[in-house]
Image (cartoon, rainbow, N blue to C red):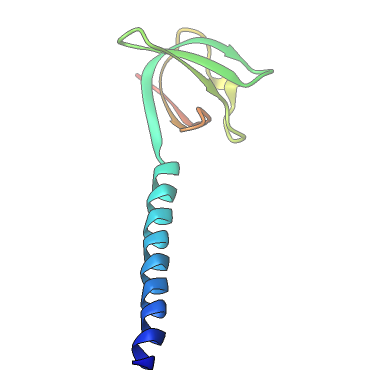
Length: 97
């Protein structure tokens, strides 16, 4: 009986650690998600790094340039596809043709 009492806590701890690992892995994957908007640049502010883009449905997205984004290459009226993260930070900007 002493063996069962010792093994049960270890098994319980192992199950709890596994559940925490799975939950953490799932949350990490959700945080790394990248969204995209295809639309037209409404405004660009190189000083603040803010970009406003409107999609075909008329929804406006306010996004913030990331450290690798050069806002000098885009201007109002440009057709673009912008990839951004959950914090609305731009990951990439692609000009549409």
